[in-house]
View 1 (spheres, helix red, strand yellow):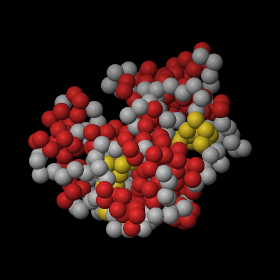
View 2 (cartoon, one colour):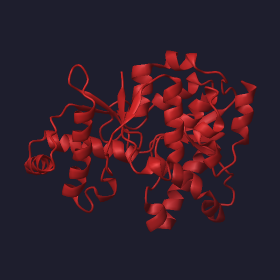
View 3 (cartoon, one colour):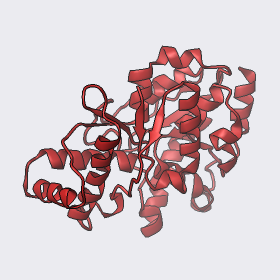
View 4 (spheres, one colour):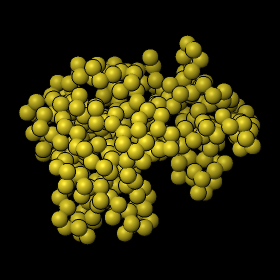
Length: 296
């Protein structure tokens, strides 16, 4: 099956390592990905709080493009959205368009005026969902070349891929990433903050709140003995990694903690080249990861 791929803005910018590692892993697993042509911003930064109409229209255009570009035999389209915000906003827009309310009708008319049509045939997927439920852990295990034995991993899902819709995992205690980590030979850390919010944009708007939320996550991962935190969200990864120096000025006892995308960890276990996985972009050294991969 060929999947359409919606990168969104983050994976072409600060989340570039996510795109690099995702594409490398999917190539290794022989999962065909085709980038959605002429895609636009999903509207995450304008959703609800600024202009719901504009945000829904932006997301709806991507859904209409997906229908036009990749219908399957049964008339549906599989659209992968790796970014948590993109994934959530596309799902919200889809629910809105299916509601037959006044906003839905307004957006559908706007699409028609732009030469597009949406008929509700897109299935929005997260990469974790595709890997666990379409590819399967057994198939992934076949591609593991360097099992990450001895590595303790805190799987951080964030709040957007499992709430409010929870289409493929539990809304408060998800386990998909944990099972994937076991398949790679590492040990997932059992911790209660795996779906707590990192603060999102609060690190840049109300720093004392955003930094505190990130500290709580990193501190708990450290307290539970994690060697690394992995995530599936570009903003979560940026917050947890890029602000560690600032966080340590307030909380000196916090040790440096590598924060990777789950696809980077997969690529390590699969023996893929470091640069293909964007590992050179990490801000926090990952010596323990290197040792663990060699040990396998």
